[in-house]
Length: 261
Image 1 (tube, rainbow, N blue to C red):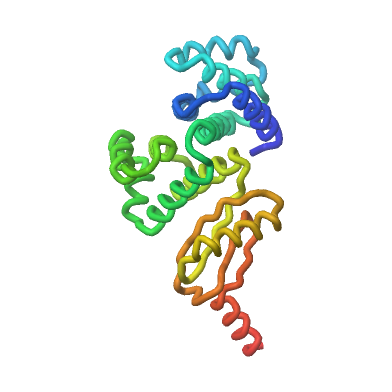
Image 2 (image 1 turned 90 degrees about the horizontal axis):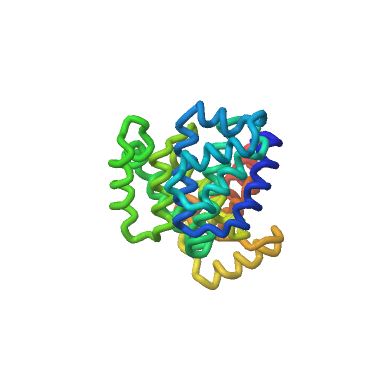
């Protein structure tokens, strides 16, 4: 995002907190993001800094007449901010929807874990990723597929994934899922650490690792565990752009490089 959009988003997140939306409100915000994101004309009007806030508020009330007043207020408040582009305004509405769902649903950790588990399932199945991400498929059919696959997941998870399959972006579908998980975690005051090991860690090991990483990064972290037998042993941890590779495979590779040199 451009600097103007980052500031606009920060102000909009504050307005969202004041609105205290529930899960339904979050779903409506995502619907608003799809409506705005699907129309270049609407993006241009609502993100135009030359149009008065009152006029934008009137347009929002007409466009989203079926939504609750708090949701309309959040959209109107966001439109009154100065965004770098109409596309980034639509992205901002989407993020507000994710954050509202995180606040109105289960703990951010639980929701994030469900999104991560689904991301891993999609990442490992090319046919499933194509079925969910193709711009050629109908939205209703993809939503029905999501509901079948995620029958045992929480409503908040299904709401986010339903939105993503109806609103394909330039991002790969798995990357869109990962972005949603990051936003959900941040909305709950959490960071995300991906922990790859050759075999599953025990609950006690995960708890110790979670505390150690939290102390290192100065914030609570939600741990997502990936099983990768190629690591042989040890652990590889990713937190944002940081990678801590203490796997046996990495140490063996370092040894090979030293011997070759």
